[in-house]
Length: 298
Image 1 (cartoon, one colour):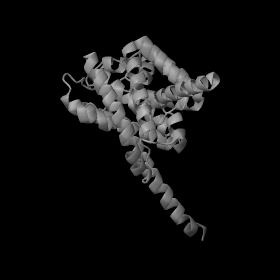
Image 2 (cartoon, helix red, strand yellow):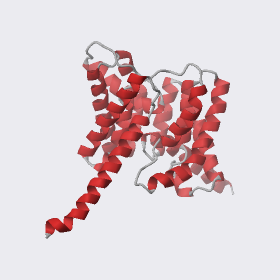
Image 3 (cartoon, helix red, strand yellow):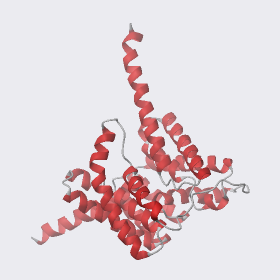
Image 4 (cartoon, helix red, strand yellow):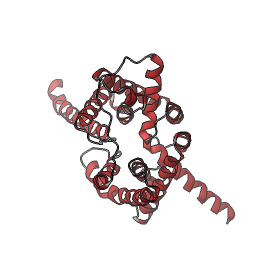
């Protein structure tokens, strides 16, 4: 009896940690530990928010009868964690943030079922879109919403600033802002896949560099606000080939720059839209290639 209870608790903990790891698209408990360590170093409030959101979303997924394999892989918990992180990022009052975080995390879990089926029928992944939808529903009611990165003239960046800015971009995948936290995120991704870690670095570096060339503020670069969408896009498109990956990263950077110009809190929307666009376009290209293949042989 005691052994069974211990195993159940261990499985629940692994599920919770995988939910955190899925924020950077890794179904790995150690990745989740690294993200939690980064939040604790940067702001313990973020660690509490992520755990709260992941628990609420996973419990809701169980109550909704979703597949056990998907729940154990963390596929239902990470959007809840992100939704809670967004609540704590945009709401200063802790009591209000807790209430919104739990409601938003629960909402992502109930939305995920029908929304993911609709996207899968079109060959698209859902990524962080449930979090974005739920957050955008309550965000207009929040006072003092943080403005996105702005595009203004800045001084040239040296090698150390470039390195810390890229690492901070990895931390911003979970709303943190610290090069050390970003290094922990990178270690967590590498523990799951060295290839994915390299892709995340490439995506963060290219997106950050593109924004720097466009004239983004140094403070935005240092905070990692310019590269996190590129890092996530590169992770999502790792298996699509380098050309598609680079195209997706470029698109995500362009979309983020556009939303910054109009002052919209896009969060991870540039990553999601860019990845969907590449997935859709790649499917069309592959379908046309397969359709024309017999003709070429003839």
